[in-house]
Length: 379
Ligand code: DOR
Ligand code: ZN
Image 1: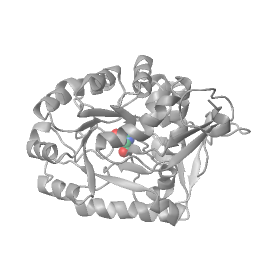
Image 2: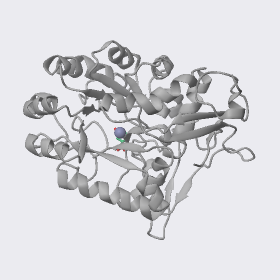
Image 3: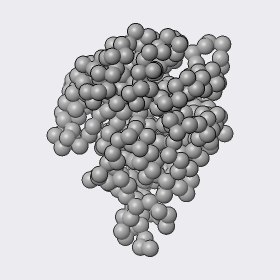
């Protein structure tokens, strides 16, 4: 077989030394926060750079609860992308919209939005679990008609899987959610497609791997790179704070095994969640890690370290569309084995991004100050 460096051949083992190239079917991001207004304008091009499609989270204020709101938000995303990266970038990117489940959401509205091609899926936020989740669901028993309808029409349910019970330790909230809520939900709705989003524990990885074919999970780059020590490394580190919070090293190892296993039940979802620097670095810092600028490089590093580059294409570009019942993307991307910032001190500590207001948006990217070993080549 020709060396990857010579031919830019696709994943399949071989010597992945400096200069080697890895070509993949163009990937998608199955979980991202693109925000709105100036922040949307600042961040959207980062997601559209490697990804053809992205499942866009609906936790705006007010949340996206109607098809009209979803369609208008989709248009704002495309307009912002056109403004920041041009017509070709906007034409090449498809935002896949989600509905925010409230206890009063109308199942007919969901079905209409799904049927019109506005809503690809619906997102369940347990009320109080995370950013802008106050309007979420307090108890799954309060929305039986919504869940029945989604099961009937084949609309995937995307779950932030953490209990909000203050008596449960924050590091146990995902595992307890699985036991108390997810397992019974799957039993009540055997036909419902469920994605357990941004899994963080060995329990979640095992539950999904052993679960029915209707159940899958997304895994973020940050949960593959950091464990909970990162939050306290040399002081309090708000840029590593997200929800679900990173867990112990044994959980990170379990997530790495799941992501690189080749199982079609695990796929790429960055959960890139930008908050302006001053909102992160404050007395009550917001949860969320901004990983969109180097997301595909970050995943490539994990698969490279695991000796599993042959599995990256499935995780990034195939398992997600197959689960959602969508076509695979036609295009390709190429990554090259080289330092992302070969001469510098590492990746920028802060990004100052134009947003159309004249005052840039300041965001700390995931991997700030570090080096990554794979670089995305521009198309
Ligand atoms: O860290 C997070 N940030 N987790 C979430 O579930 C929401 C997200 C956000 O919207 O900021
Ligand atoms: Zn999220």
